Image (tube, rainbow, N blue to C red; front, side, top):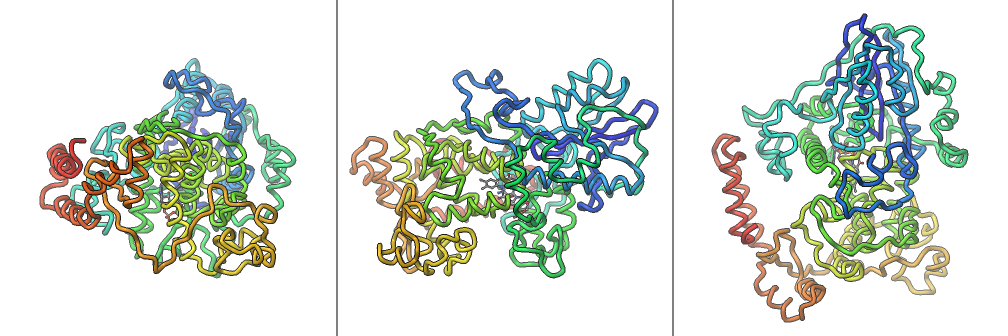
Length: 615
Ligand SMILES: Cc1cc2nc3c(=O)[nH]c(=O)nc-3n(C[C@H](O)[C@H](O)[C@H](O)COP(=O)(O)OP(=O)(O)OC[C@H]3O[C@@H](n4cnc5c(N)ncnc54)[C@H](O)[C@@H]3O)c2cc1C
């Protein structure tokens, strides 16, 4: 017997194959405790492809035959996987190979189209595959494999442990689950996951992780498959990358930097180094820094949840893992719609494809220090904290007005923790195309959109200035701003010409002029303007008086219309009060079924209808 595992676009598809003479080894819902005890199986395909000319194309449907008629292919000339992430994967794979060898098994690593490699398995073989329904890119490949095996082998698709919940345990159909985080949490029996990790007695079960096997079966002797990577190649990073098709320049560029795989920003191993960052769970903010291991499949959400159970940060861990679950469920529900420019919300807006702006953003040369620091950190380390991802994405979409997918494609290339559901799921939220009711609608030009969102962006930049008053983070990634004082490093455009010269930062020469700017930083003591929400605005967003006027004008009305809307709108305090009411209603006695089932949904709809009008 042997088993196969295949990493495709950052996700493991475990292809377990057994020879008819041997019993089936089925461990699809199991993951090892961590990298050291990982129990991935014996064959692994590392597949790297480019958008252009890739075997599977962008989302396996390059001519959009399975997509809506009006959707046209766009040449984003993006790459699927940077050499840095490929190196990380290779390390995971070689570690797994060693681990399996130490337990008596063997692992073959192959590179090639899975259907072509697996087609060469001996007749009568059984292939068991951990299915990944979150992406058509992956299910299309599974279909190809099924086709290739149909004449002589059998393929079983199994659910596996990439999700926290097993599909059979879910109290709703897989493609028709709750669309919001709160509703999902309540439906699954979390009492109030925003505040506490309590679960109801009949909460949906989360299957416990299963320990890795201590002994592995012996591999089939003399198995010849296409694209096998020899140990000689696998043990040499440069050779492995070459084997996978990376160019000499890419390899040289990438191998120059020493990379600390376990730590997100390469700050170096801490004392008492904890590779998988479990020590973080004892810290107040409790960030796990574990997403890159999860994306490859080194560790499952179930394993993390169970190990975090006793920690002070259990609530935070559960909260984040449920966000991950929501993104996975959304991706399954939305299918190809997740990759549409208009997003699953079918939001029509003008977009820009300004390649100079795109390249400036990718390279961290926009002239906006916080954005540039984020983008350079991302490029160099493959890591960016959540807030950096959000703000860099917001700037890309709303200030530069660029097609959100181009930004998402770049993240797909460079993120160490790239994961299709998390990446595209978060991007559609950032771009406000996830739901038709989101805020950014009806703009006639990207300039109008940028003008509307500018103030919001300025608030975000100001918050970052407050978070990093000395500019330490900016100095780390932007050496050319190193001589600027703390006040100006966040906003070099606000300095006098003279000070810029002394600081060695002449805009347009030493550092770019701010694209889409300059931006006004808000000082802490600056009084926040009153914000109101309009009863007909389903997004529930709050806007200032000026924003109401701007919005009216952007829709072709005059300022009086904006003023009228402002008068109709209600202060934020009223919204907060109603939110509290909603919270209390959701927590009212009753079984979870009653609270989250049809009856209570109708009740919620009534509640929202009374607030926002008919939905
Ligand atoms: C534009 C954008 C793109 C993103 N792309 C990815 C991606 O490709 N892969 C990825 O794993 N995460 C992505 N995220 C989500 C989030 O930034 C990372 O999961 C998080 O920063 C990882 O750090 P951590 O392991 O310390 O997470 P923690 O905060 O410790 O959370 C633990 C785990 O919960 C999950 N999680 C936390 N926040 C989110 C979230 N917002 N959405 C989904 N899952 C979450 C992750 O699996 C994470 O490892 C993206 C966010 C944005 C805004």
